[in-house]
Length: 194
Image 1 (cartoon, rainbow, N blue to C red):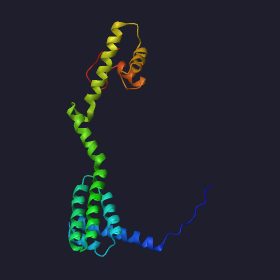
Image 2: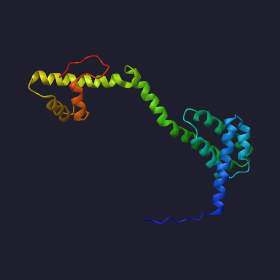
Image 3: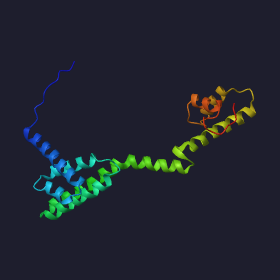
Image 4: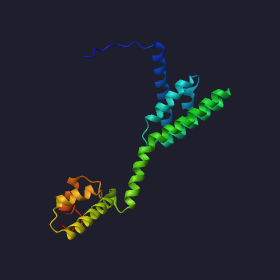
């Protein structure tokens, strides 16, 4: 059994982490009330590492459907800070931070966006939640099975399913093919029963 050990953290590191969370909280509450300038004030005199941590933390804790608005506000905060800064290298660091925030936003919303796109595509194929696409696949399996049964009336559904899978005519499992061949799906038009 592993013994639990207490780790001692560098007190300076703990202070920085706490400061980063404090900045993130202040920025989040300011942006939530639409106060971009107040959010920018929270970043004044903060180390860029803390600002980077805080802004990324804020963006990662926002729902995907509102992260676009949050990103816009965070970029505005960065631009205000860039105007305030005098040194070019500090402004360049904020510019890089803006790019990183945009990448983080794209990564955070990628699955959300892909899910919506998949839903639209499936809907265009003929209905709600992609069921028509599934029905077309099932109908294709039934058509192939009907042809096999016409050529050899003695074939069982089990041998038809095995044959379709071996000839790579379907990616479904044998049990699924057998269920498709046994009869129509609930709430669908009657199909030829094998």
